[in-house]
Image (tube, rainbow, N blue to C red; front, side):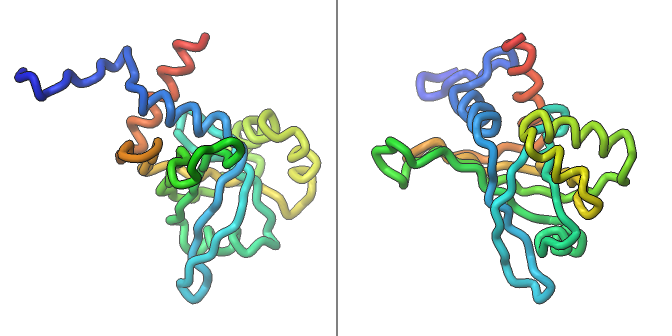
Amino acid sequence: MNASESPSPSPLAPSRMDLLLVELLRSRRTAALGTLDEAGNPAVSMTPYALDPAGPDLIILVSGLAAHTRQLMTHPQASALVCSAEDGADSVHALARATLQVRARHPDPGSEDARAALALYVARHPTGEMLASLPDFTVMRLQVISARQIAGFGAARSVEGSRLAELLQESDIHSS
């Protein structure tokens, strides 16, 4: 290795960017969800989410009455933006954020998968339990295919969904 090359991080030692990405996804509770409407036009809505580290999936609670639910059923490929808070930021241009390319999957109501996803969601958002009891609300999994992480000026990268799953699992092990 020459002097200009840096060693790649070991799987046991996540990089600074790895740690920032995991922290961002775990600390935030909402995402901007980008979907396609019936005419193929972009539409954005805010959605609370829970993170399933085994996926990695974002778990959302959806209503059959919501436009984004119909849009995800028609066009399951979507995007979710998770962004750090503006409070106290020196520059909003340098806010940490991750744009996740996702694929929506609607577990069969009453299935083990739906119950597990709902348990994760309610653990993160206890008030969601009341909504989930209404007949038109169900959970949806947004499987992360890839992420584009911005951690400030000059700190940007792409991360595959499989690598994000590894990072989440590793951080669970290290925080236990």
